[in-house]
Length: 287
Ligand SMILES: [Zn+2]
Image (cartoon, rainbow, N blue to C red; front, top):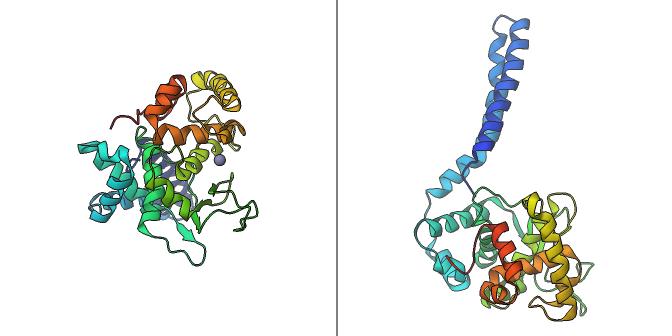
């Protein structure tokens, strides 16, 4: 994540010039000093466009709390391997995410730093190789105490650790978030799974082919997914059976394995691994 993207600056600067120019022109026709009215839209657009960059810039001046660094070191092997500038950038992404997202919890659960960091670390991992990307959607993060069912109830049949739809909050079981980060290498990470779905929803529906994917490689990706889903159905895949539900779930489960146990995924599924390296512009085995 960048403090500000050049394309964003150009967009807001162009908008300010156009709106300011039109209002100034109309104002000047109406009253002798009406041209000054053109400053109003310029100031509004500047405030709108610079609000987040200024907030992020202020955030970069703050040191990462030592307890946050300890949590990341203990739970995120990829972060532990990072050094210098790359580590600073990962920490900055975590700070931006925690600062900008809304975290809520059902009664009885406290939104702890560990829960916030658990989600922020997932976002920082997904975006680390693509500094120009943002998460495709901003959602409230809503924590449930434990597993929930399709009606969002905590029943004996509850089987969901997380859920996200095309709209609405990202719902996560607090217990699963803590459990998954406590056991890296298991291939299960509900945060990576649900955030991966957001890359799909940016085009309206989850199809397992994120629109951020290079269109030239999208067809090859879909063919690869069909082959790999067959392996899941045959029981010869590293990925758990849930990945065969549909292409969207396949992508989410593949992303979990890619970041959580990259060496094993590379060994067992080199083509899938390389396709994800190309998409995320990152080899999670390194730092
Ligand atoms: Zn899913």
